[in-house]
Image (cartoon, rainbow, N blue to C red; front, side, top):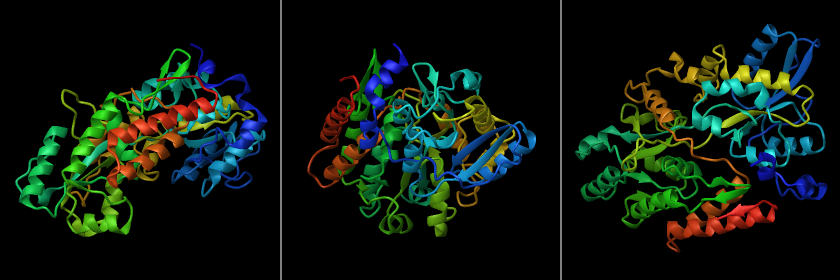
Length: 437
């Protein structure tokens, strides 16, 4: 099977399709040209890079000092920069490099907004987790360099577990048992908040179950929104909801943080970036939280991941090889890992990053625990079965719309997946892509 056959049909890049925005995903991309830091020198090849990670300015300056033949200018992305970069590339301009959500990458490949950089970065694969490398690869071709991942863990209230004599659950069956025991002991305290609007918490559990919204079958996309693993997770969530074991507040709201701070929520399962956010928003609970591995499915050691980012070479890059060389250094060099972790706040997708001492700092909020040890283990046990595919935004919207109806008592989670599956297939077919169910 040819990757181009799968991801693009000849007429897909027509002006009418682009003008209609049928392939564009609002996402984490770049910003307006002409702004940002200037290269250290006008000599040699110039590469323009747009990204959002904190501290990139210093890393770009380091590169420029050490590589006078390839000079990089940087612009920090804000606001509606995603739409701006899509329009710029479609018009034949735009930067050379951009940071991009891996969920958005397939639509960029389909619209021919990115370059196949396999020949420049193939040797880098051994330094990346299998799951992160799979997120930038299609049919053996590579379209980006991974930059950060979101391995999952479970934050839990040590004092609540101690007060009610609960063991920290290692499996989802044990988790349900703990949830029931907690409700029996105190109906005002819930095992967790199940937010119908937080897709990342859903995604990490379906990846753990070795499920994926997408697969590849011959020259066609296979859609798996309601596949076996997803139904397994849906049935678990349904049990939690039906038995009143969870709250259902939308995450990030004042009401949600009030539940966290008043002791109504005993666990939060989420990605490696969440512990610092919890510490900021629940500072008075310092010493009362710890981090444990995400509970496992029966007979499996898998963990999950909520998604990451990549640096990609855009279609109008004047020097794609030079751009790829910088992206390779930025994301994978031994010289950059500490800064990406400590200043950038990334959880590394690289093996040298996962072994960096910078990850192993004790956390005062978590009682002196080295919480990243949990997330390192999670990254090492995340299956590479998740396949990134087109129309991620459409599927996400469909799922969240239907999950809201579940919480309102209008349908079940399994029924919601069936509706979202139909919407995903219809959208892909409307885009002119081959689909099998």
